[in-house]
Image (cartoon, rainbow, N blue to C red; front, side, top):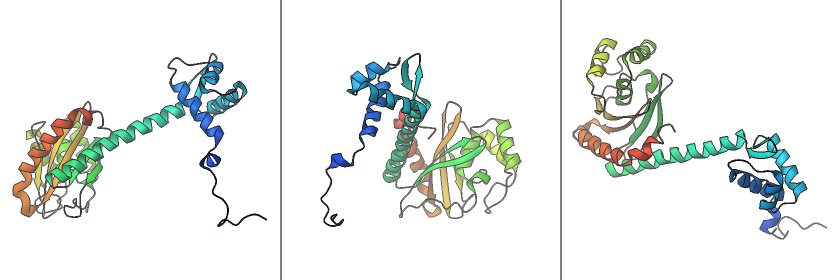
Length: 261
């Protein structure tokens, strides 16, 4: 008679582990330590595996793309490289997320991170709190770059041809009484914007809200960090923007390698 689930003895932790997976992972780690590849016999010896077991696992890992074999030597395969790249990407994203949360708390404002990629505006991360909520995206950010500080800041970093291409696809439209009225007026404003100066807008995208965006250019990527405030706190906008600029300057090294999360 089998014991019921309620009375069955707890299995030791080792009984729940899959030995073949453990051995395969040891082989992967061992191969990763050999930049110029290693033969099966060496890998078996270094991992303490029997040679037949090592051969079987190595063939399986090659078949699945985690290893590749070349002239009797084993190297990391494309699947393993993709795993590594994903981990690095997550680490870069974590750097940005942590930075935004720190600035949000230090300055007491919502903080946004956005990039211009493949002809589109992408808001990559927003950090806010219930007491200082982010601006509600009531009109698509991608289609209203002319109205909000994030979009104006990103467009100001592009060349004239790229700006005109964007506005051909997403022409200026008035979404509040304060929105810029036409493409020509917007282009003149962007031309007057000095490359690394903050861009501000007051109720052009959302009534009752003022915003500022700081340009960040790393290589060919146009990016920005931005903040927003309710319009009754508009007198804080410039001081908060200067504080964010200072914070970004201190972290620019790590942000530069994290810009493409």
